[in-house]
Length: 107
Length: 121
Image (cartoon, rainbow over all chains, first blue to last red):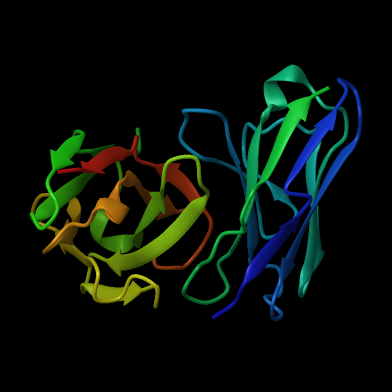
């Protein structure tokens, strides 16, 4: 099975800061990588699929990159409404494991 | 509108059985995989398994194989997750989710609202 890791596990940044979250797969998954945002008490929301394609309706301050085993999610200018936990997910082959999550809050 | 509507919260005792549901609407139910995802209190997302209602092809995470059963009734556009004998460690929020593309494994763009399962004596 493919294992997903994320770093950092949590971060605190100021409004307007650039934030980067890293996701690593234990084996190559091409670009079959998704990013989700989950706000406290809410349902997860798809942000990015195919490693770098922004889901419809998602603000352009979110972007993704990477291929193979190493991926990043970047928030170009952190906003208060971005406080959430972010998860990556492999969908290359079952089981479609999620990363452990990165909790983002405002400093 | 594409929707997944899940059954309501459940409170059960250890050893009891349970079947929760996820009713789909607004799209062709038989043409999209549906997955189940667990989230234990204060923890991350865990992928349990996935079913293709068109032919009942089902895949499980090795971590959950034998612990749960995923099924679907295409006559009523509903997927199910069931347990034969619940444990306290099954206490969690359970989500169903649908991939973006028909007939394919893909990122999940449609999610149910979640079903909270509490197992306590």
